[in-house]
Image (cartoon, rainbow over the protein chains, first blue to last red):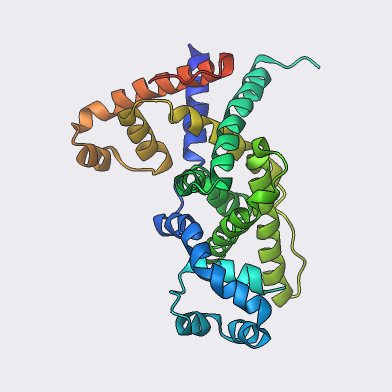
Length: 85
Length: 198
């Protein structure tokens, strides 16, 4: 019987080890495919256009706003991944 | 090498878990957005726990690492050599990103970044915990809900009773029954890859 109790206690401990991540963080990560789609054209242009690339690197949020792309956390993360060395 | 029964169970569970991951990764590569949502949902707690329990990052740094890890995972999914190896891959990605964040912070304070001494033990615990969550997903909805609320979300009997419209006096016995079902599901995962109904 003590085996059952020990096992059950261990399972309870393991359940407690993984609390949920904040909902907003999860939602932002789930937006990545849409963020990528909205950035595709801009990133392709930035690869060809040094001035655009420099503008994006200088003030990413403002440059995204100029391009009509909402600077959601997912968009900003992806853009930085592609633009920064 | 001969595995003890616990190790045998873990090995079979890892195979079952990695099969699910491989299917999700393949669907993501094919452009299935719902598969990406599922993959994020499935690993969000794991990545979060590595950040805050494994590396004891602040909430601010943890959020930054969390978003970085999923952005890198999304962008680099095509480079994953073995779709079954998603779990160790994202664990390593998270570990490296946490270390980079610690190093960046410590550089400002002119001290060296170090991994916490008990990091490997914590990561092993989180791996095991993820397998328990996979078994939990095989139970009926009410059991999943009550166990998650009580243990993972640390909600009181009162909060659970109000949220699920259950008399407070029945919560403890429901939790106990659901734990027995979860234990059976874990054992069943150990003896067969077949899903278990709760």
